[in-house]
Image 1 (cartoon, helix red, strand yellow):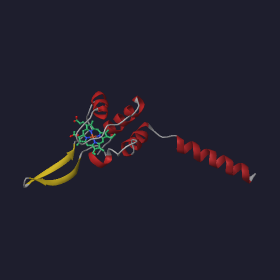
Image 2 (tube, rainbow, N blue to C red):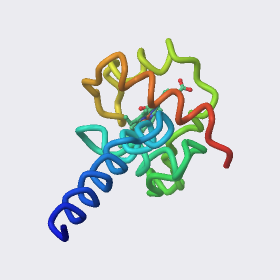
Image 3 (tube, rainbow, N blue to C red):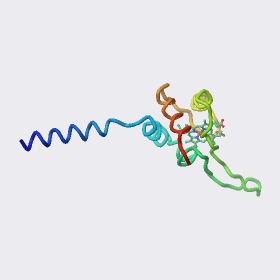
Image 4 (tube, rainbow, N blue to C red):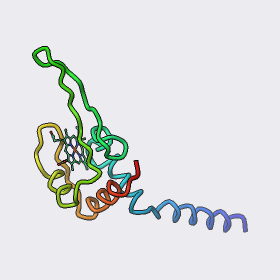
Length: 109
Ligand code: HEC
């Protein structure tokens, strides 16, 4: 009897764990997209962040990751595949990009 209860409980916990919403999936990818997390350069929710400050010829330069909360899905896809000077290139599937876009466009902060 006890064993059954335990089995039932673990099955239930496992199911709970594997059921995540599109928002949670998008957030997970945002933080850990098989590469450097977007979160390091674009802020906690895509609102943008300062990556670094340094001096160049005596002038202060501020390197920023832009606000990406309102980037259309097509542009998001392009940005991920493009070669930028600072931002890395990512290899994400269509459904991963979909989830990322969902997360960024529904995030409240
Ligand atoms: C190392 C820092 C860094 C990381 C990590 C990073 N980005 Fe960026 N991203 C930038 C910078 C800086 C730019 C501005 C273009 C440039 O100079 O590279 C940019 C540009 C973009 C743009 C284009 C914005 C626009 O207005 O056109 C999008 C969209 C974007 N990033 C999304 C992402 C997503 C999604 C991730 C994670 C999968 C990510 N970035 C990871 C630094 C980063």
